[in-house]
Image (tube, rainbow, N blue to C red; front, side):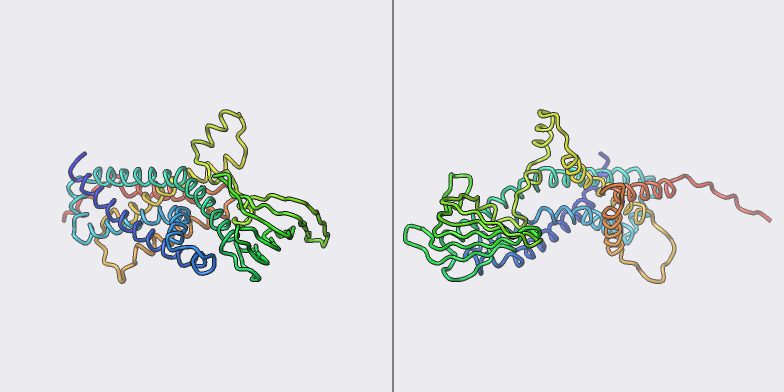
Length: 356
């Protein structure tokens, strides 16, 4: 690797990493503030709050990853242009080093975001589900106050009449309204939380399970004993989707073994891999916008960081509403950035001077 390529790559990576670290720290603080009810209402400690904020961070970090790479790259290129280093690179034939350094940053960014999407995010989702179930189990078994309605998770409200010294719960009531089609109510004379080491189970005794449909239909089932996983009360949607808490390697191996490639599996794998295309697209666009010095004096300076944010906003909107799939915006950035680079880097013919 040439010294110029190494210098530029180090400059680009440093700015992107610093910005990504700052963004992740701010997002973690925001997650902690949003989850502060874990401490205030559910009786958990600050360590649980910090861990929950950390486990909910990967999806947000993935959304901002390519934006941080683009802003870090554009800031480094602007600094090179302000110091006239960018002019020297072009005039001394260092354009290949500039392209190589950008390719190194893009490759490192693709590797980083694919690591996040394919492995870190599913593992974080799995651990977050375990933590949520643990918090819900602790809330039901020891923290829930008698004769007081408490929201376990949005859409689920619980009430207990009392608690004996051995952990037995008297007069258990839970109202689940998360499903817009069915309202489910659990009523039991007694309950107890148990665990097998991996899962938490709520044992309900001498009660009934009532279902009320959106059309007003009502059904009731009485039972002597009814066991329900605490996970059912700890998730905002009521059910855990195994697809989103399993890493891509395990999903591919399971699909190869069974021979079944469901549309949901292919969509999930495509969405995870599409984040790498976003990194490539934003790098090409930023290099085309800021990688070539101009001698024109602008009337006012446009903050390129804001331009990168607008490009990312437009890309997300195009990907969300395009019938061609969620990678449409990333492919559009790649085509636009690659085409602009080819036009800007093409050799130009020098016009001969006019003599009298």
